[in-house]
Amino acid sequence: MEPILTINNLTKKFGYLTAVKDLSFTINKGNVYGILGPNGSGKSTTLGIVLNVVNKTNGDFHWFDGNTTTHDALKQVGAIIERPNFYPYMTAEQNLKLVCRIKGVDHSKIAEKLEIVGLLDRKDHKFKTYSLGMKQRLAIASALLNDPEILILDEPTNGLDPQGIHQIRQIIKDIAADGTTILLASHLLDEVEKVCSHVVVLRKGEKLYSGRVDEMISSHGFFELKAEKHSELLNVLENNSDFGKLKVEGDLITAFLNEPMSAPEFNKLMFEKGIVLSHLVKRKESLEEQFLQLTDKLN
Amino acid sequence: MLRLIKLELQKLWLNKTSRVLIFISFILPFTVLVLSSIKINFFGFFTLELGELGIFNFPIIWHITTFFASYFKFFFAIVVVSMIGNEYSNKTLKQNLIDGLSKKEFILSKFYTIVFFSICATVLIGVASFLIGLYYSSYTEASIIFREVEFLLAYFVKLVGFFSLCLFFGMLLKRSAFALGFLFVLYIFEWLIFWGAYEAFGNADSAFKLKNFLPLESMYKLIDQPIQRIVMTKFPEKTDIAYDYAVHWYEIAIVLGWSALFIFLSYRLLKKRDL
Image (tube, rainbow over all chains, first blue to last red; front, side, top):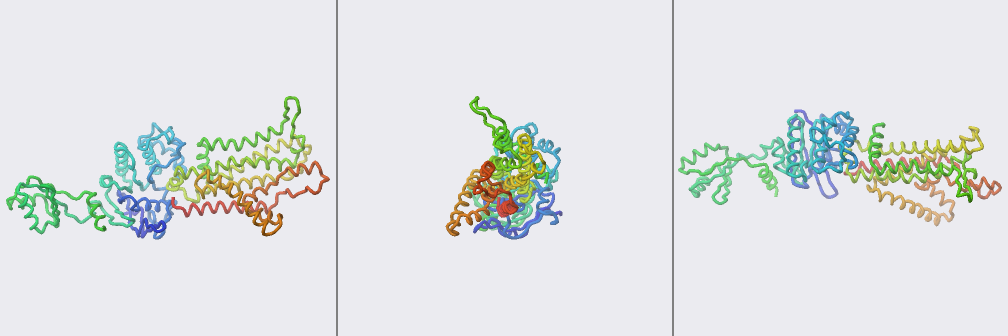
């Protein structure tokens, strides 16, 4: 796999506060990555460092194969950090022209990219007249101007209304479908779950996990069960070593698996024990549950 | 280089406030110059024609126009500090860097613009002085006309130096109003140093010599006030008012040194800073 960004033992200290601690991970071409972490976990700082706006304290990082300078590499990167930053007195088109000048891209791309984010008819309006959703979409258009190898988005849906969030997510999905590598930092777990294939989990500047989203914790999933014979069911589960933790909420029993087991297998087992289930659902932990489990482990 | 200037000019030109200020800083000194050169009739009571005082004669005209025109640099100084302040308040500085402008290029684009503007201002004042001089001056020999054109060079260096100082204050304080205020603080600070030196050395001459090395004073000293010189031409027998008004190479060197230092410090500041 072709690496796009490699980070080795990166550390950033703001005075006594360590915002990023000994962080290492690699971003490979073609995947959609999420950086997950609560507020203040070092997501934006990490992105700031690789984007050349924050100075690192220790460690190193390099773009692509390591032979391009960060300055040149950034011309092949599209990035939006936190809020859309443009010159309020310029129109959308003028702002994008300026970005074209910085990146050394031809002006002809402007109309094409504005079309993608649906702002072509507003191109002659000043940036300050835009709504937050439109500003964010303009920022995406700006980041796409150079047809980047990788698109970096930091909290792209922050502060948007549901419609705006939906629009942005759709745009991100469309871009990902074109094969562009995406790095998405967010504290919204369902957002990452919906869009990303890989994830890096940060907490207080430290990496807790990096890898595929579905392999985040070694879990075989769990069953949600209901039965008329509630106590007998509970009894059977407690005596079966395939099951670990049990959680009872009212008449709903949640049984976590220690060993892999399919739903039909389980159903058959119950039938043999003479228990008829009125409710059987096999699920894997959602990203949110996995994330909370990961972060809880350290508390 | 052209790319960086174009970049900055687009930022300035599309901003209404800075466009007006640039316009004023070009047009106002020019208008004052032209107005002062024409004969003004005060409702028949008397006519005022500054040209008759001989101030538009070559070569003194170079001295006079550059001295007075340099006061109009404050308009562009506002543009310089706000072009830094706005980048910070709009957070576009951060975005520029993310988009692939290096920190060095960012400072250079500002510096090139300063130099570009200073060249324009110098050329404009040079051409205007030349034309007015041709009209009024009784000397038309090239050797006299072009004597003392070094005042134009001094004017250019003075502008570059002053705007570099503004650029540095803008980078340091991130806010335009504070940066302008700081210019005034520096002015007072230089007088405090002068006062301290006066106490230490015991005479004003050495204290002034020291003050000549300080940023604002060194810029001011590039073009000495011409009033005394005009008086001198009227009363050539009064030798006690004679003074050294020439542009010296070391004066230029000091200001260029400060400019280089300010630009370098601005760069260092930006490089060290987390945005």
